[in-house]
Length: 228
View (tube, helix red, strand yellow):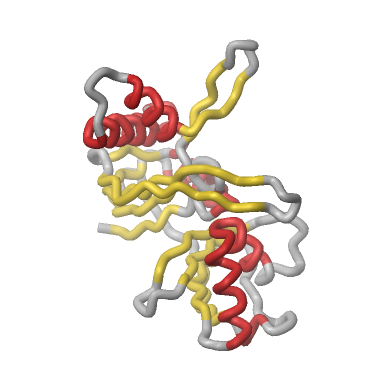
């Protein structure tokens, strides 16, 4: 695996790309970063978007292959720093983590068919229907739903980890993008940070490469970790 930090240069070409990012959010970011992997037929990378000190986007990318600026004018758009990423983890090791995820749950509709629902929006909808509903109560309901999602024992077992405590919720974000096909993409993400303990290193590394949760092509699922 490779972990890369990708920043946007100050150039005319980069400015044009920044305008696209501003107009179409996560989908535009995904399309832009895919240009760094021209030899791949499908997405084999995870990414996380942040805002740099100068106010422009910067990206962290986890990939099987090194990103490259050798095609077209990419060297005039991106500055890339890449390193091999092969963490040597042991059972019982504690890690600080940051994770942006799209929490969803699968439920049956009235017709008996399964449909995936956005956990946060589902909690918000139901909280609004309760007597005496207000912004604070809605926020508490959404916080509880987010914490229940990430702390579900079955999920943590699949990930090979244990949460030392419920993580801090840094923010919620609503995303709305348009694909080239004209279809609209809407989803919500939540940013967690906290401390966890590794229970099964091989399970965790396997999941780490795949990413956590859904909407991975839209900038969710890449966990940032550091030993403590």
